[in-house]
Structures are given as structure tokens and as C-alpha cells.
Amino acid sequence: MPKTVDREEQRRQIGAALLQLVSERGLDEVSVRTVASATGRSPGAVQKYFRTKDEMLTFAAELAGERIERRMAGVDTTLPLRRALRELILTTLPVDAERRAEATAQLAFAVHAAHHPHLAAIRRRVDEDVRQALAAWLAAAGHGTDATAVADAVIALSDGLALRMLYTPQEHEQLLVALDRALDVLVTARDQP
Image 1 (cartoon, one colour):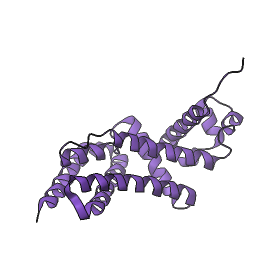
Image 2: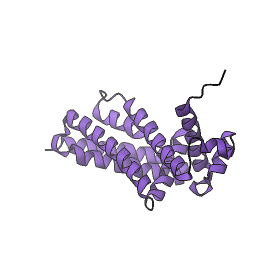
Image 3: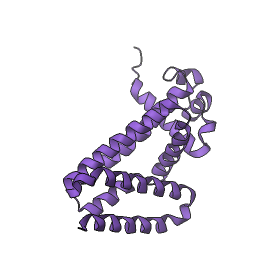
Image 4: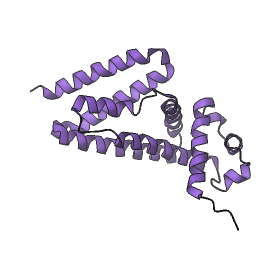
């Protein structure tokens, strides 16, 4: 009897291996051959799921965005505003091995997207999904007309902290203090007339 293969699960395994490879060795080291090696498959077996490197990169970029969105969706947004914002931002920061690998890959994809429109489109879509969800939540939490601007500020804060944490891992604690200070200012500013 022929073996049933879950095609989507196989694609996800390959995508996860690609994300890990990018985080460990950089985007320049990604090829069908290196991803095949990392997954214990032959290049031909990988090409059954992805014909080209670009197809693999596109899928991996979507997978990374999906993981972040899933973590963000798991945050209890009924918490007090400042605490919920902190939890949302922490879902994106490289504070553990898995998120560090994702953040490293996300940074590589962002740089690559500057010259590859298909990756730029994925990045914009994920960013806009996060922005809209965050703005809707902020509006419901009382930010009203400035919810989109506040969402943009929160995303910029998250992106900047993630970048700094990648190249200054020895400053994680200091940067988390900076996060807390920025959130204090942001939440206090909201309460000002």
C-alpha cells in the first residue's frame, strides 16, 4: 500500500529548516542543495515541494510571519493596556532561541525584499495584517482616532528593539528596560489631554 504523505506538513518542515539555516548561516547560504542537506532529503525530494530557491524563500517568509501572528493572537488583550502591549511586543523579540532564529530570518528577508518585489509584497501583507489588528485593538482600548499612528509606533518600537537585540545580545536586559520606559511614555501620553 502506498505511503500517504502530508504535502503541507512536508513543506512546513522544509520551510522551518530554511528558517533555521538562514538564522545560522545567512540567506546567501540558502540553496535547494543546502536546504535538502539540512532536512536529510535529496535536492530532488525538496524540489517536489519547491521548484526554486525563490519558492522556498517565499514560503519560509510566510511561515515566519504566520508564527509571529499566531503568537500575537495568543496574547490576552483583555489585560491592562500597557501589560498587553508589552506581551504583544515580546512575541516579536528575539528573547529565546526560536524567536532569535525567526528574527534573524525576518531581518534577512527584509533586506532581501528591498530587491525582490515578491518578498516585499509578503512583508507588506504581514506588516499590514499586524498593523490592522493592533490598530483595531487599540481603538477598542480607547485610542480612537490615533490608533493607527500608535500601532505604527508600537511596530517601530518592536522592530527597532528586535534589531538591536540581534546584534547586542549582551544588552537584552537593558533593552527590555527601554521597552518598559517607552511603554510608560506611550500609555501616559494616551492619558494626557
